[in-house]
Amino acid sequence: MDNSYLRTVFLLAVMSWLGTAGGKHDMNEMSAMMYLDRYGYMDAAMEKMNMSANNYTHDVMVMATRQFQSFMGLKVTGNLDRETKAVMMKPRCGVKDMMGPAYSRRSKRYAHIGNVWEMRTVYYKFTGYSRKLAANLVRSEFKRAAEEWSRYVNVRLVPVWSRRRANVRVKFGRMNHGDPWPFDGPYGVLAHASQPHSEAFVHFDDDEKWTANRRGRNFYQTALHEIGHVLGLDHSTDKDAVMFPTVGENNPELKLHPDDINGIKALYDRRFGRFSLEEEWGQTSQKPATIIDKELCENPQIDVMFSDMNGELLVFKGGKMYGIAPEGGVLPHYPQSISERWPELPSEIQAAFTYSDRGTYFLTGSEVWKYEENNQRAKGFPKLIEEVFPGVPSDVDAAMEWEMDGSLFFFKGDNFWCVKNGPPFKGSIFSWPGIPGNLTAAFRYMGNSHFISGNSYYLFDDVSFEVVRAEIPYPRNVSSTWFGCSEFEEKKATPTSEAHCLQHTVTLMLTFSVFVVSRSIQ
Image (spheres, rainbow, N blue to C red):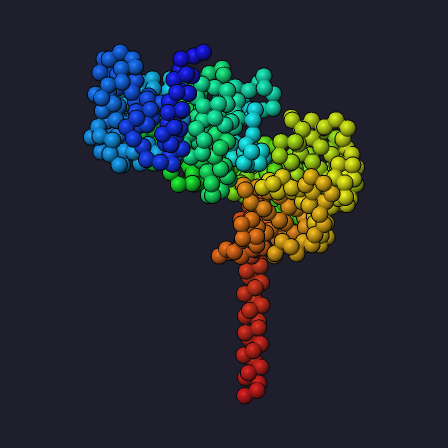
């Protein structure tokens, strides 16, 4: 068996026995030494002192501590003081801090592992999902993190279903999960990733309480960091950088820091040419480029709205499909024909939802159509709704998966049907405070519940179980919130010069009439 594996298992066993692997208790000198060894500081100290490997002397420990303090921006004393131990107990990435060129710390804060991808499109595949976070959320949040890196370099991370095509394999695991670097339970090591190579991977510790919001451990934030590694970046010494080893407060809207951007551009700009989405789109906004679709803006009545297996938000309307940006607005290259992506699917769809990693379901009349990997129609479909979801009526208005517990909700008129492990439970839509009947669409996206009725959009708070209270109250217009029609509506509302003249003429005539009437009364 590989010595590095045995060494890692030994370190974790000692740290677990000491109660420090998960950051739950105080850190003593022995556990601190294990920490410094695990993250490369002991080896770096021995190399700097020209000492043989595995020479764990007091002087090596002091040197390793000094290097750790320097890396983390602490006061460099070589002593295991309270502040140093506090940083050691923070949740963090499992990749070593001191590795490769990072041994001789650089003037630049970012660092490169050494390898880079030689292709512009890197494919990744999920080979294992979380028990804590729904598969569709895992996919969409990982995709969002990958796209944040692709804003600044001409490299794309693209999801695929074929294991043979995947350059990077992504999975969740616990403790000994199939590589030489076991996880350590909750709170300690959150995830780790490899550098770019033929067997590249990203692994997440499924003992963490993963979420897509500010509660628990935010998955997007951790994925953003690990993707930096799989693109070729080492840990940064800049505390504000995404690539800093330890994790700060949850931030589901985290963006790359200039240090991260400089690092990734230094890796790929010379190879593939300078690139950023801002330059490509000719704008400095953080929002993706969108277009205004006149048809959607003039008549925002849609058929369905849902997110597919890749986490992309889609709208169907009269046989056409529109991709919707997370912040709202229609993505370029849309609309497209529904049948282009889902062959043979009818154009009139009443409800659609993605059910974890099982596939995407489309409901029309009394039929259910199911599509799996690569948008291939599942064998035996279409089927009757009664066959697939016994007890659920035909002609439903909307449907969605409640990924908190895997329940399915089907809405029709003023009622809903909840399906989970048995016959459905029928309830009143008014059990959802503030949500009307006769819904147009219901979907889960970015960890929240969303409801649409006509041109009215409702954002639902799953914790307080009510429509979100905001300065601009709900419901809001679907057209301006999701389709980016505010600008279109403003233009439409702005009178033309002819209209201005007519308006002023009417005003003057009314004023003159009032004047004449008042004079005649006198």
